[in-house]
Length: 174
Length: 174
DNA sequence: TGCTTATTTGCAAATAGTGCGAACTACATA
DNA sequence: TATGTAGTTCGCACTATTTGCAAATAAGCA
Image (cartoon, rainbow over all chains, first blue to last red; front, top):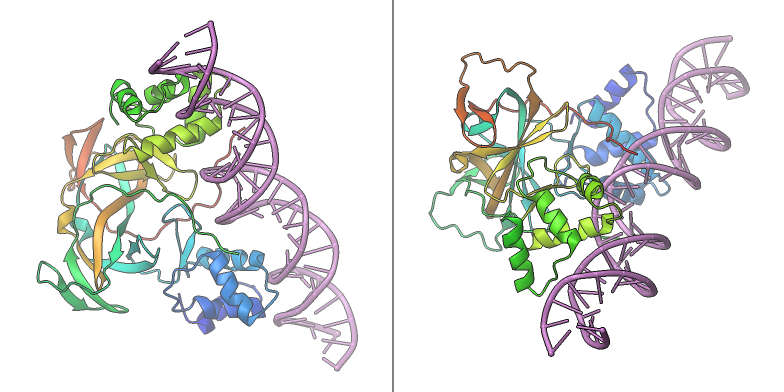
């Protein structure tokens, strides 16, 4: 997602108006790496602007998405999560905390997949399910540490999938 | 998913009862490659057993899932889809029809991903978004045809992701 | 056949979003 | 600065998907 100023300019160019609600939401989403849900963003926004409507949050997120400024993520069947990172990237989900991380994958092109005849791939989305170890077990293995994006990250050769552990209930708030 | 008979035996072993509803659902799910939703399965079931409850369908699907006989798929944010194929596999979604296909990927282990420090991958799920070409353009490219699973399939080196096209509305029925 | 208790069902309720219209306001213009 | 208007916000109703609950029903054993 571009900076709030740039997004504001794009809005004006499209004949849209700059409201305090929109400005706030631009700021809250910019560089936001938490992959918030609409509800979550609404709560954040409400702190700074009591009275802002959840409806407006949904609306603005939809606009930003249409403008290509943010991406939608349907990850675990819960609420949609929004991501201001629109680079080609993928995700890792911590099964314990539900946290969602951006993951860059180098060589998707090398995947060998037996696709249905005539299937034209437009894009691929990869989700790594797992968990964040309390104390990063820095045993040699194949895990090369590579400080690249946001935080310290390690390049690993992904383990093959085992079996999806069921998520039974959904989180709730109130 | 095991055969209806085997599943029935597992049910008995667990002290569960064999009801006509369950038997019907075992049969409808076995070898079902359509990745039905609960609602869809309910409609199919209703044809053979008018009066069966949607609640029972949900319940039985949950049981089967807990027993590891079927898998859940949260794909596009719509209703959950159920898959009796519990092998390690992935999916391809046709953006036009919404159809969902099983996809086997050979070399997931070779992916180079920059995961967050300390992230332990438990499994990886890959979804190929695209569409089924009307007339399979069998141009040479890298697409090697490999008749392997269900239908004729081609092994391709997946194209890298472009940008996720937004799905605006949901399908509806009634 | 009768009993016990697992199941099925129907209905209410929770969650996640969307459609709609009335009230409000950004902002171009006079 | 005052004013008009069309874009926005917001509340509410409503849809879709799924789950909780309790009464009615029915497997399957004795």
